[in-house]
Amino acid sequence: MPRAFITGITGQDGSYLTEFLLRQGYEVHGLVRQTSLMQRGRLDALGVSSEERMKRVFLHYGDLGEAGSLARLVHAIQPDEIYHLGGQSHVRVSFDAPEATFDINASGTLRLLECVREAGRPVRFYHASSCEMYGRPEIAPQDERTPFHPVSPYACSKAAGHFLTVCYRESYGLFACNGILFNHESPRRGENFVTRKIAHGAVAAKLHGAKLRLGNLDARKDWGYAPEYVEAMWKMLQRDLPGDYVVATGEAHSVRQFAEAAFARVGLDWREWVESDPVQFRPSEVGLLVGNASRAEKELGWTPATRFAELVRLMVDAELHAAGRP
Ligand code: NAP
Ligand code: GDP
Image (tube, rainbow, N blue to C red; front, side, top):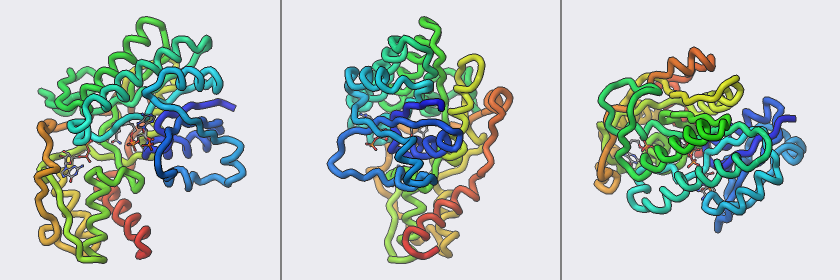
């Protein structure tokens, strides 16, 4: 049975990747950290029986801030593949906590790469890079050759993790890949990301008459569906040779369009419910980030299936369902 070790297993992508790997017959080990509330809701519904889960999913305490715990776990688990998804993933928050963001995202990646280098056996490594690294690109769409111009502490930390992954691949011959994933969303997206916030807000407006406060409505994003994106991660590690891949839909839509479609889904006009929130504006905003995933299509056989309208619909419907109004 192939064995995977996932950092960030409690996050959006970690939970979908766990489900996917279980379906592929893997034993899955995940890194979890001490939190004051033991909320691991995303792992509660993995689509396997609890018996199966007990046999094939194992959670281990540790932290990306601590090299010793990572080394101990990699040594004990002896994984065939490591999916490094853990980190501080919120761009706006990275302006408030830049040092912690950089330490966990950049140095955390370095700590883990050192463990892979010292593993004493071949371990395939995936690093969660980000389209944010392009920042203010000179061309659109962006592909694997587009230069990076990061404009947030988050993006800088991801660029550092990205280049460290390339450096370890080239210096030590590691099978290490970067997935340059554009925004991907789902009902499991963190509640302070704009798509989830809008989907939740539309339902709260409908059911409770609550207003929604948002920042930059003109921001345009290349939004895909998270369960499809984790499959691309796995496909990268099944190739004969390691490489870096853009994963994206190639279409950009604005926050305004997302709000319009989400509120329309519950029969409301978004303009009557959305207010401006200056706190949500960022010290610097990225340019137009839209991805060209043709390399992933050609070499991985990966294409996105869920498009914008369907994504909005499924996220709003999930919020309605959660509110007891399917
Ligand atoms: P997420 O939902 O925010 O999950 C982040 C995960 O990292 C959580 O499991 C979190 O644990 C864990 N984590 C945070 N700090 C940690 C630490 N110090 N030690 C160990 N674990 C820690 O993020 P996501 O949306 O699944 O994204 C996965 C990865 O892809 C992230 O690295 C993100 O930056 C990157 N990415 C995401 C997107 C996107 O659109 N979603 C796009 C490009 C790149 P807790 O549950 O304990 O907080
Ligand atoms: P990001 O692309 O990784 O930063 O994902 P987010 O979902 O946090 O933000 C997507 C875009 O939505 C960014 O350009 C934000 O400036 C914009 N945005 C507008 N209003 C909000 C808001 O209320 N919350 C968040 N998180 N983003 C917002």
